[in-house]
Length: 124
Image (cartoon, rainbow, N blue to C red):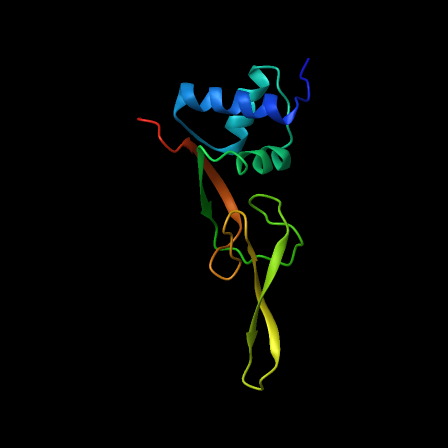
């Protein structure tokens, strides 16, 4: 039976898994490690918790696909802010979206397709 843990339990288990493995490539693979420990978390909740842990470094590879408007960041699910520019007529237009938490920028990145998780000070 897989249970939904508190945030503290999830953080504890995430850190233990990374201390044991060093680096994990792929969000699905990480969620499988958690399920093996009878811990359940949605991908959205998992990414949100990961970005709150300062010891963890998250590397994201992006596809070249265009990012359509969403109100939430596709990487960490936090609120996006708009990037505005001025066109040749002097009118302000929305040219993209950015995330203040993880640094996602829709003008320079596409959609995220693979995540790599690792401890910042871990010898591999």
